[in-house]
Length: 411
Ligand SMILES: Cc1cc2nc3c(=O)[nH]c(=O)nc-3n(C[C@H](O)[C@H](O)[C@H](O)COP(=O)(O)OP(=O)(O)OC[C@H]3O[C@@H](n4cnc5c(N)ncnc54)[C@H](O)[C@@H]3O)c2cc1C
Image (cartoon, rainbow, N blue to C red; front, top):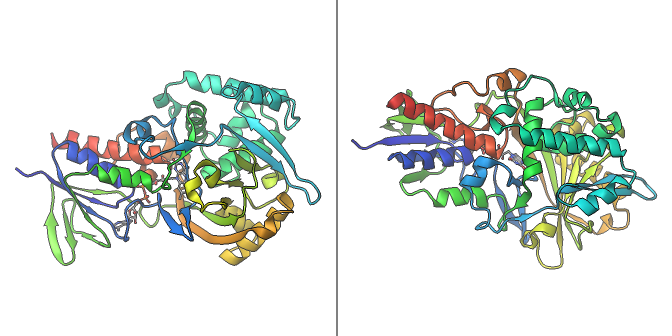
């Protein structure tokens, strides 16, 4: 019997579902409602720049992603482990370098004397890192429910260190700056950051879904397809009824609560940073500021910008923009430029906005109950990061779980 399955949604979870189904002998019809594959892992070329959809990196520490993707083939290059931390000031902004003391011991030790924070906070970062490295990945999500903020306080970090370091860093990752995200997710991300690098592919983040797609041999891609489901095994595409052994839904339902983000990409004559770190805004919380972090992707991958230019990417968390009553691109851009003029007073006038992106459903908003039940059996034929956790790793795991569950029931 010919084994046929359908997958709806060609994001990273849908593409990985196709690959796994093919491995089990299935021929797959893949339906995507937009005109491209990749979902949220999208990039476009504009005026010679590669613009990812939002600031998006790959974490080489993610175990499943590392086994699925060939980072070398994508020409991935890494950010420096650590961060630059800026305290904006109209006259002279102060910048500290917070190098990862385990991978850059000398720079890290020098950081202890930079007076950005007390050595005690840095020691606590080290202790947390050591503790998490001893916990198995699968056990990270078995721990008790609390917010990231509660967890960091319970580990003894000072309020000012939480506000000036963890809020902009994890705010930019979780797309919320209150640190209300479940601490189990924090532990997972922190653990993976500690053992891997943040990297960018040469051709932009869309290289990831492209690489997966290129590995598919028995999948037929149907773009611009808005299928309607008739039953668990039947759908209608362009008026034609089709039936399968299984249909996998690899996208989030419209009612899924989510987090939004603004990203502004600037063209600059040269990079404003002198090292390959991302820059965190220490005043995000304490100064009620807007920008969470800034990165210069072209410092890592020169292909992101034309020769003799730099791509500067600024991230504003959606709910922070709302708190400032900023609801349209022009007003976000204006406020961002005003803030940046206190960061780079001499350079900002030479920067040009290339694009203002608003990503409405950037990450799923997941409750603590969701994390309580994370390791229970998954909903068969349903995947996407909203069914596991909001990350590339979460999207891949969701696909694996959905296919495993289906195969178990089909046996
Ligand atoms: C700005 C931003 C930054 C991020 N940064 C990181 C990061 O640094 N590290 C990290 O690990 N993760 C990051 N993520 C998260 C990561 O991108 C997502 O977790 C992952 O891409 C989700 O993949 P998915 O397949 O679950 O969903 P999606 O990528 O959303 O794919 C769903 C697909 O289904 C399609 N679709 C929807 N409805 C239908 C329908 N009815 N019929 C047919 N097709 C449909 C959509 O068009 C889409 O192509 C970031 C996300 C954003 C937006």
